[in-house]
Length: 508
Picture 1 (cartoon, rainbow, N blue to C red):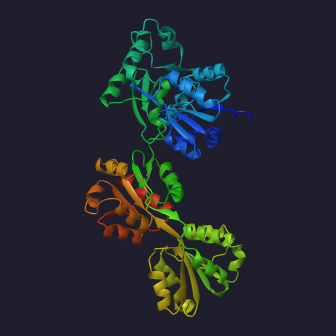
Picture 2: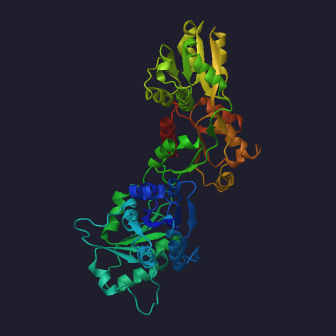
């Protein structure tokens, strides 16, 4: 039997923001059997890889090398003989990434490889700091230079005498520890001390920090704020444009860490809305949505759908699990012919419309009480309702329908459980005051969040964080647990909650 032949993909992960990874990079990760990744490669990219893929960290940072370059080369050869390997490197593999050295080692060993270019931090980081590397009338040339060359080296690979005055914009990578030396060399070889300069740390991420100045004072300014690696240095007249073009750090939630407690499969939309406004989001799902322990009640309801006058859906999860089971039982939306359909909330309604259903009722407010008020006694009396919902939920809707003379079958179509999460990490960040806001989108997210910490510690633990709730029911649950709610939108949607969070922090 012929041995399996492997392949290595030398993949550029981009500068830090995972959204800047290329489509081809994501495709390589999705088929990877082994991922060998660097310190500067965003961990979120690993989520695109199959769960069973082997993940090996080989990161190198100042004074802390997980592996030497020779060991990394040997590892690539070993794994690349029989496996599909992704070598995930920060930025671009061929721009100060030692990708060429790794490719040569693979070629020498006869291992097939491909190079997947990445968005280099040399270009992206200045752009996120509001610095165009070229600009008409200011800079017509750019040079990328290693800043890692040590002062006092007998023979420099950098021709300072030519570099200092012959290139419009200079970009130094990995040079923050040598900033004073770099500046002094440029000035000694003719670059004016008043030339604009900037140092950008953790560029393109929510932790981005920029220090601006001139070649003459940039080292002192960076030292005053304690700027540390990883950082990029930009020298040239274009660095002065930052005062006009700073767009990334100027967003309303920049510098704010927001905890998203929604279920993982629903958190992405909310997270993206917050990140677009500049927030750093920490996903801390306090609920996990799973199928019910027993499908029998729903199966029975599906077999007898014709006896119902109304089906009321209260969440997008209810819609998803109901129609999944409907399909598994050999039925489709035609089984709901002649039945009136109600939905609480725009997301729930959208999920039904996407399945080809016309809605007969959406309450003005997105809560159970509004269903009762909207339908009225005449519409409820003598009618039969089906309520597919979570196994545990508020009983206000079924109780009121019964009081008004209607009949209702409540069937569980999903359950919410408390997942194993990064509780200790969140606790540590809360204690240090690093979390700006905690968001809750349902009472169950509050209940489960509260159960993750000792009850007596909870109010003091979150006192430095602002509590944001999607609506009054959720807010009431939060208050019952001793939490002070400061943000609640008038419309109970994640879009409105995001807008309210932005408004609160813009004012404060």
